[in-house]
Image: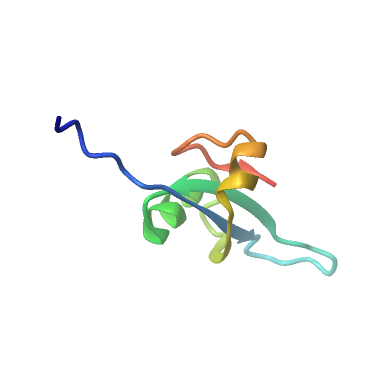
Length: 78
């Protein structure tokens, strides 16, 4: 019985570095569940400052994403 197509999500880690990095400034890392990396970067850009640098730095396993109770399309600082 055909149903609707299910989208597969990957949990990406995206780092946001402020435009003017201070001496001890560290990047803020967000976890976001999206189908691809480009959509993950765009989702984090919407919550980051306009001048901040955004970079994809990794991914999380499904087990860790479930433990963190992440939801699709919802960036969360980790």
